[in-house]
Amino acid sequence: MIKVLFVCLGNICRSPMAQIVFENMLREHGLENNFEIDSAGTEGYNEMCHAGIHRGTKEVLKRNGIPFSEHYSRKMQKKDYDYYDYIIAMDTENIKDIEYIVGFDKDNKVKRLLDYTNNPRNIRDPWYTGNFDETYDDVVEGCTAFLNYLNL
Ligand code: 4NP
Image (tube, rainbow, N blue to C red; front, side, top):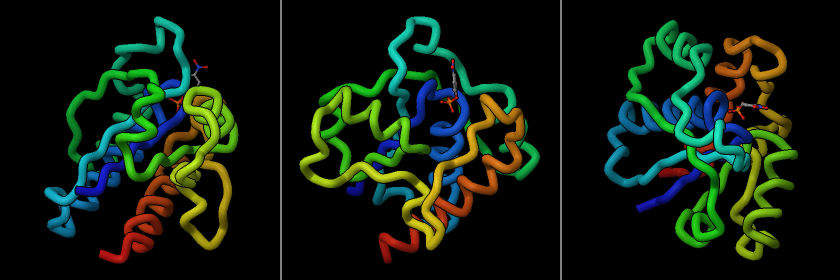
């Protein structure tokens, strides 16, 4: 079982999108039973916990024909670091925030999603851009590269 945790700030826009896109890719490859996938946020404010997926993320998933069920945001915990094999952040701020929660990345398991591509960079953040389509493109590029990297 390969355990993967996608992480962003609020766990309502980018990391649920990455979780759902990656789960869909795994189903397409018949690999879903080999994985345990979840997503979480680094933010601990109450209003960011147990929030549903952002409408913009739901709409872009629907436009692209990706099935999904509801996800409720949760804050990343220190114990998640030991449990998951891959902790996949959306941007460099997330990496700093993850290290604040879990301490030094001693097992070198924290990466940005687009670090698995030939063009390492941050996922564009729709909370600030309002553009969920470009975020979706980044997420698909990153998930494709990550699955490729796993070489299953
Ligand atoms: P996410 O988006 O980290 O992709 O879920 C955000 C959600 C909430 C906030 C920022 C980004 N916020 O500042 O409340």
